[in-house]
Image 1 (tube, rainbow, N blue to C red):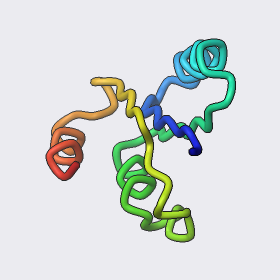
Image 2 (cartoon, one colour):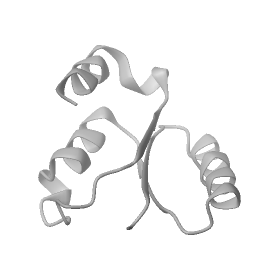
Image 3 (cartoon, helix red, strand yellow):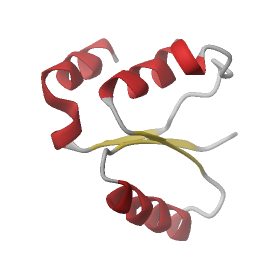
Image 4 (cartoon, rainbow, N blue to C red):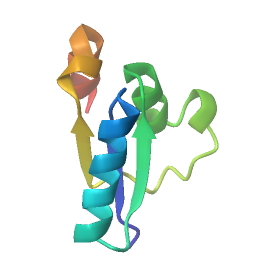
Length: 80
């Protein structure tokens, strides 16, 4: 089983720290970083740039910065 984590973070320094910590804790993990709510939506629902992504692989964990999410982000989580 492929382990996948989606990190929704617009600060690349924070995203790098999160990625480093995850790789320390779970060496075999696929990490996807989305810098916007729209990018996270595209990743989760295989649209836009991610329309060719393997739909059978879903993230086991979504880490989202509240500063990125906003109102649209809350709508995204309601869809999940």
